[in-house]
Structures are given as C-alpha cells and as structure tokens.
Amino acid sequence: MNQLPHLSPHPKLSRRTVLKLFGVGAGAGFLGYSRFTKPQPAIYHQDALTLPNRLSQPRHVVVVGGGLAGLACAYELSQRGFSVTLLEQAAQLGGKVASWAIQVGDESFQMEHGFHGFFPQYYNLNRLVDELNVSQNFRPLQFYSVVYRDRAYQPEVFRPSRSAFPWNIVDLAVASENRLQWGLNLTKWEHWQVFREITGFHPQRSYQRLDQISVAEWVEQDFPKGLYDLYFLPFAKSSLNAPDALSAAELMQFFHFYFLATQRA
Image 1 (cartoon, helix red, strand yellow):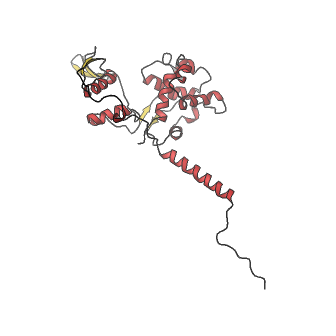
Image 2: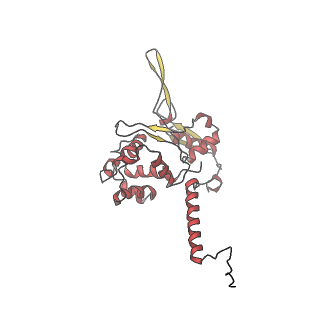
Image 3: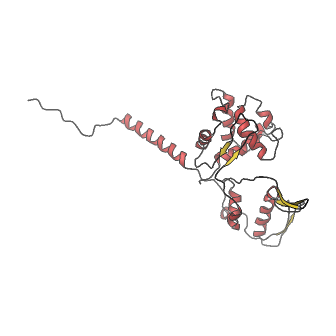
C-alpha cells in the first residue's frame, strides 16, 4: 500500500508573498490612518519662547488699530506687563467683527460687516478664546451653504471634515452636487498645477511666483471653470477682496491652510 504524502495544515509562504502581504497591509494601514486622523499642528508653546514673560522695567507701547489683531496684541502685551494705549478711529472696537447700532426712522437696527467663520486652524484665536473663557459667545455650525447666482450650479454645502489631506478633498468631491461640473481634466498638466500650488505652497517661493498675478488673471490660463466658480471665486470674495485685486499667492495660501492645516477634531 502506498502511503499518502504528509500534508502540512500550515502551507509555507514564500518570502516574496510575505513581503507583498506586508506591503498591502502597510499601505492599507497608512490609508486608514490618513483617512481618519488629522496631523497635529506644529505650533510654538509659550514656555518655549525666548522672550521674557514679564518686563524688568516699565514700558509703554501704542497699538494702532482696535480690530481683532490689535486687540489680541494689546492683550498679550498687557499680560507681559506693558502699559498699553490702543488707538482706534471707529466708534467701536472689533474691526471687521464689530457690530454697531443705527437708527432708521423710529427703528433701531444692529449693523455688521457680515458672516464671519472661524476655522479650527485658527490656533492662536482659539487659544485666546479658551484663555479668556469666552467660547459661549461663539456659535458652532454643523454646516453652511454657498448659493450661486448662476442656476447652472446647485448650492454647495460645507461640513466639517474629520479627515486629513487629501481625503478632505475627496470628501468635498463626494458631497458636492456639482462634482461633475468642476471642469477638472487630470490629463492636463495645467489642471494638476492647481493642486500643486495648494499642497506645495511656500511662503517665499509661491509669493515670488504668484504675488504679481491677480486671481482673475491666473484663472485665464486654462483654469477649470467649475472649480473657479464654485470655490475660488466665493472664497476670494469672502476675504472682502475683488478677484482682480487679490493676488493668486494670497488665495493659494488660504486654501493651503484650509486643507492642510486643520487640526484633529
């Protein structure tokens, strides 16, 4: 009688197969991590600064402008012991975030510059809000919508993304009712340049390349029309700058921080 060959219940895997499985697993792990985890921002902590926390002798400073930046500056200086004089030409403090009362006939109305949104990547502002314990004065938004005059586009609904780059852009595309109208052609190098400028933004090199060009001039160079109409134009206007006056470098910096600098939620 011929004996049956011994069959191992655990077949051996070749080294190449093991390496392939390891590579697939590592790739899947990286994609999962980047999909659901946001990188922590690289920020300076107060105890790491070389500046003194308190003055050794009295000093008096003048801060010109009582907007959000001027108020924050005056507060930080006063915390370090400076005597601060704050100058503001308007009747109220706050700059663009201020509101004021007006009288129209027999009625009184509260006026303001319009909607202001503070994103999670506003690290310094958020730290200051927590330090002053005034978070109750801010209202969290689960979403906000942008409605377009051109009826060719459906309203865009923006929600907080829990994903790191580039998945937050994928989330934006999936959620957009206008994704097929972006006009994006990934076979064109010029269209890839849009993402290159956003992801590869550099404070010196990008400004040397794009600061002399307005947003309106930049998009004339074979730019995806849908992307411009749906995102670039509304967010350029949200900074209270006309697209023919705002530099392309400024807008690329805005989108760079928006997509790549959002901290873990």
